[in-house]
Length: 467
Image (cartoon, rainbow, N blue to C red):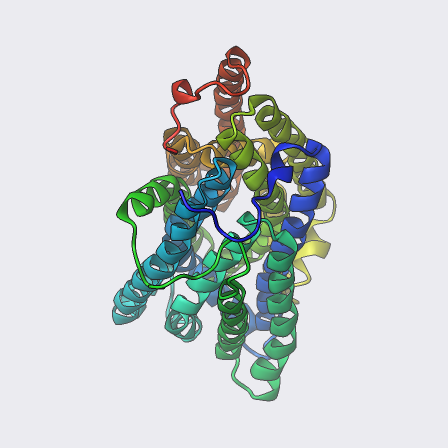
């Protein structure tokens, strides 16, 4: 096993958990919040395009399922790689960790290009299937055409930015995300309004910002003094590592595919019972809710290297401790989202549109959809925790149970009696059921942890990660 230049981030196994979580989560929170603001800025500018704002924002909402599918392809590679990097560093298996880097580059290029080619060939039928009408299809097509042309840059940027964070440089990853957000906020109004490009300008600004950030990630990993850096040949695949990485990434991949399917069915049901404006209202509600979800994702990013490293080092008490602390913080965040949704829904949705009908529909949807959101943070951290430990089946089950087992049937049945409101009320019911299942699984895992002493073989836990 060859050693690489530099030292492994051994502080992950020694420093106080609370200190580590602040150190690793704060940059992740800033980065993820910035990423959410990135999408919100697009929506806010698009929603205020003179004369077409409501139709444009509804067209943007139609693209959500396709965007989720694209994200799913990226997470299939990226999330597994991040988890492997953390665990392999904990095991001090630096040679294998190095090979993960080349796998990410090669797999992301192959998958992203294939996805773009297929979707561009059938873009209009896909958007129609996802809920586009004659009024919203032109906006959805213009936006997604440019996004798909730059899909490879997006996948590579997000994939390598995650590896920068997992290799012990969370602030660098945070700064990259902040760069894309700030540059996008500057370019959006120039392309949309000054150059008169409309919704196409928002898409072009997005791709250009991610392309610039991707260039820096290549520069970062070209530095041979770093623990992880490109080695020759740069384009290579270690199929053993690729299989492990993809196996771990299957959980979040299926979660994103399920999210895409759910978004598709939400658009269809809202379009059926409320028309284009109902779809647009979901776009607004989704953007607002995602701001809080992304904060939780930032905590999950902080959890990931700490839990993965200590699990690899077989320090189970520390693994348990970081989960509990992260769960407390994430539930606080989702409680704040619940309070916003119930107390100031109209003020929140008014950021995106001045259309009084759209404001009324979105405010109603926000209030109902997030009425059970306070405990969602617990479900989010639990699914991510199992993924960090390589417990793929449990991670997949938690991901799919909320989306497919609970939410999807409710979206189809409740509107039969409650019309449009039935779609919105499906969310708090499925969220509550998912939290109950998450609690049962985490209690079972912690009981197994309690039977193990630090340093003992974790084979009984069912992880897919091997030394």
